[in-house]
Length: 416
Image (tube, rainbow, N blue to C red; front, side):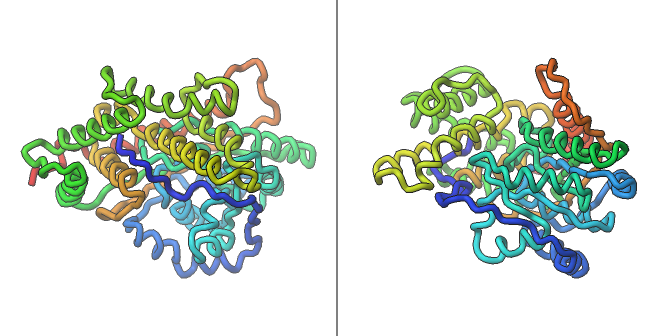
């Protein structure tokens, strides 16, 4: 588990202000016409793309439905990649975007609204963003993109737990549309985004692992297979975190040790701020609940410098727990593909250095799933929301099929 005490700027210590989308068509049409998305994504290594089954989206648009698109979120490039889907069916889109993105330089905060993006406060209940989303679906002006995982996962073949707000927004809009017209519908199209590595994996993996090994003051471990090198780095990083938080290296299965580390990070904070530790295995909802309690007094400037520093440390622990959860214990053993090995090494680098570099060319596949018609009513007897369950099943099924397009590691890799 490649984690240090770094924390990317995903938490903003400022009062939240809703950023609305640009409602006109001129700017998104300009962006599509001159393929500005393609230029930007090439800088992130995404050099080619393919949309599949986009006719399903086109049919929903032609039928006049309110349309929500729910892609998985494995890479930071996903929101822009969805622009290819919009272009392929001749539409513009609206999209929820985390508020921290509106504080990254000058160009990104300017560009996001022009492409139809609007802010969502992940650290609170953002009524303005929710109401805006409902209105967009009710009017069926454009498709609305919502990333239901709520954060970048970097596990392209595996979904994290989906956030229930998706169902609330869709159902509320379905009720409003039905009042306006009993025949009017809201549908959700699950979307699977898959990245395939086009570069030479040997050239990408060896120098990157060597850099990480140097950080441990190790000699390059080239006497080991690339699989063993990746596993050894992972064990070392997990041991370092266990030494930091437990005072010792723990024993047991890899997955149980990671779960133990996550609970060591989150449970004391949940007891302090929420009254009891959560038994929820889904980490992102736990993270959201804690941030909603920790941040308000920081934003309002009610804390002295010592308490403010203590809470920043707590936020760093929360961020670490979320990053640890992005390393499923069986991810590499279940299907040891080139894509999964590359993702793992990239996560090591990102979590060690807090930055992401391009290590080779990627192809992006965007697949549209069948429309899921949204009922205005929820079955209150069901323990799990049936709509969310259907959505998760559809998304994971598509990802399972797309995962097979990445070659297995043994078939591709030649030891340098």
